Image (tube, rainbow, N blue to C red; front, side, top):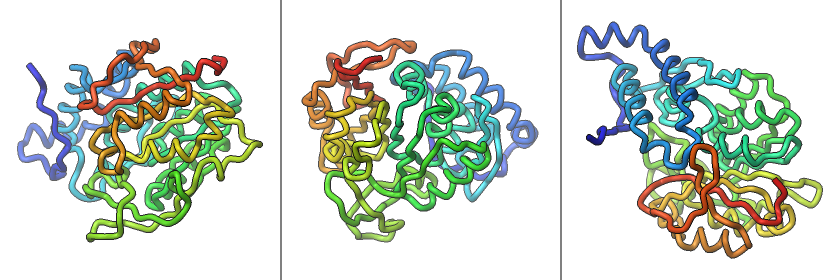
Length: 315
């Protein structure tokens, strides 16, 4: 039987006595969840969030811990890999890190498998650092460039970098696109400001103006990129257009979020994204228990990460 999943905010106060008791021990429950999820190895598969275990863990933690919460709810937690994060449990991204740990599951699995020890790594859409911190810990001799347009998310990212005393991360305060200029970020849901997307300056939900740069212009010849993760709410196609020289020159391994709704909102599509990547000679893969499996057809109704590897790239 499918497990019904919700991400809507919940009031912090539990309506039932047993729930209020469980809420008191929720940090221990979340810790056990993080350990169980990592030991299960389910996060090493594309589409891991469709697994029964992921859904059960999220459902239990959501009900007991009242996630995401209404109003700011900060906590510092150990999230695996020897990392700690200062989290706000009113934000979905932070809730996922609290329940499932750092690394973003299949993103971490791809990084472990394909990133070199001294690569320059681009985390496009770094958010609060769930993947950035894991990259820096797993490859201490690599340089991690955390590209994050939102000033709010950058402040959280800086806090988490300092909390772990990581010195191999550089924050890049821009949005990645195909044309340099100015744009606006818009957040559809207050509980998930990390999912803000580039939009026309209309309505009351535009959070801030940002500068858009081409990655080719920001990372010149001296930076040899070996791994690139893109999760920028539909702007992935445009960011890759603006990184064509990097992709041709360095042939980095790509991990790209494929979100049909977000791509359409940005004027692109799943088909255009996949064709733009494969058109540069890349082969497309999913992860299956940490192993790459060629993509023959993509289910565009599901939000998942795509792995792209150029045959000229030595792994």
